[in-house]
Image (cartoon, rainbow, N blue to C red; front, side):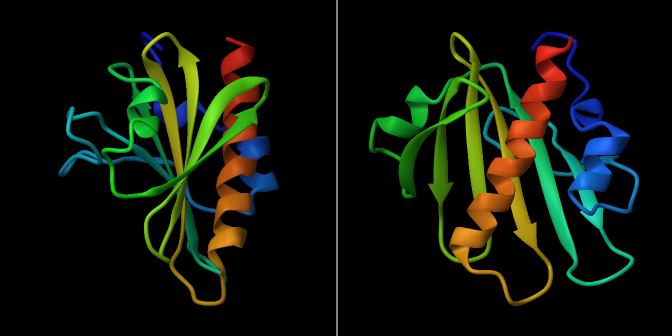
Length: 141
């Protein structure tokens, strides 16, 4: 994960596959996690449904941090591109897929709709689709 540019994890073609229409944007204000890691937002803003994917590299922890039962989220194990991963659900506004990319390192992909009409299951399916595409890109590095 060293040297990873989170705004290049999804190629232009992959962004089109996901229906995204805005340039990726590095989130520099605030922090999406306790380690201060920055995320990159990939969005659909020109037409509904408005959605966003947030990609956050976490070189400090793998999926084991989500499996110890200390975090207040619903966690399910799964596989993404042959890598161990977890789906995390916290309420009804978004879904995250966290992929183990190396020992104690992970890539977190969140799907969040800015429009209504998505079930949590649909959000998690979209997050998994984004994670699969991101892993395709990483595996080609």
